[in-house]
Image 1 (tube, rainbow, N blue to C red):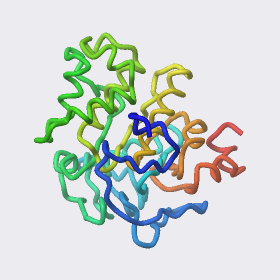
Image 2: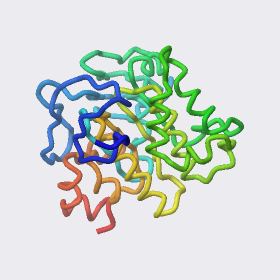
Image 3: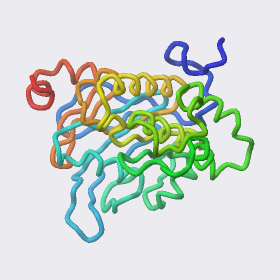
Image 4: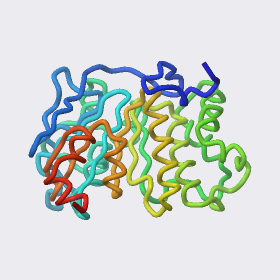
Length: 275
């Protein structure tokens, strides 16, 4: 096998960049309405979440999203549907008033975002996701802040995944293009050796060519066994690479199923994918 753990076929057993644990097989059949967890439980699930920010009204209503090992799960829907809110609920950034969040079989509903990072959650927000005044390498080193071991091998793997970052490792991250900044943000999250990677609109504001490249890299990360939960506005392209998809409308599950099934569904295509 080559030295790059990402380039072989999907299901690659080299998971050195990951912290692979967990069990369960996520349900793939298309369903209208509420998503239902698979028997045994997926690796990460926000189960029947209802909640909002602070003392404000509920934004999520009995919403369920889940992802299993080696899968890419995509959350799509119209503007204001609660996509990023659902992601933040799973990460502990708003109050889940009903329902639960479980990671690797453990209920983490009451944990802070910081504690969830220590449990193995890597989160890349849509904006303000890099330290612009620091170099690329310093950004990656910041991603390893919770580690006490030698992380040089992980950094080498990140550079294998994003070769342009190795070339620009001594350059301030703020001088990079939008797509390159997103690579830094994803790379920094991978430096924690996460059990699950969460991406909030990773292709926002980038060109179609850069979007395709980022999606290719996301697929390669999933090949190592890391579950990826992703919010995306580019719904059609995201569903093309998704093992499962969730369509949210007004904070509720409208449709869920495999990416392929949702792309083929006439109602989903008409209402959310432009026909």
